[in-house]
Length: 164
Image 1 (cartoon, rainbow, N blue to C red):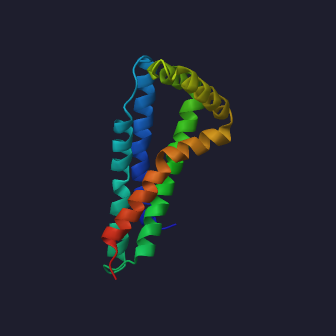
Image 2 (image 1 turned 135 degrees about the horizontal axis):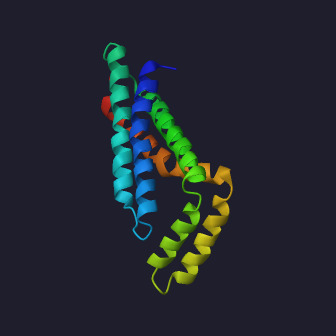
């Protein structure tokens, strides 16, 4: 695998892994407080800065030229590394340090629901808890948190940095 892709994927992974550890510690210390999704997506976007940087490095290594396809694939592979390590870190945290996450998340969602929506949200959250018992579903849900953002940023970065 290309050193540029691996190096930038690992650097981005350090950022999102630190986010996961911090959020987990915060949620365990403050079970009544919800962590802002804006913070999570902001940190993920910062981690994907390494995706942009990796495409730029790949272009420089190729005498200042890179096609859209090559740029996109470089970004995609970096985002896949970042996302995969994010998933692995979450699995370690979930199964070793926060095994009651699904119950915690479900309780918060139900408490946040308006009185009209409580029944609907309770049903949805019970379904979520059942799905979250399956490790494959945990992996898929976790990839869905981060990988789509990485693909979008790969696409935008490839558009910006392509140079024939």
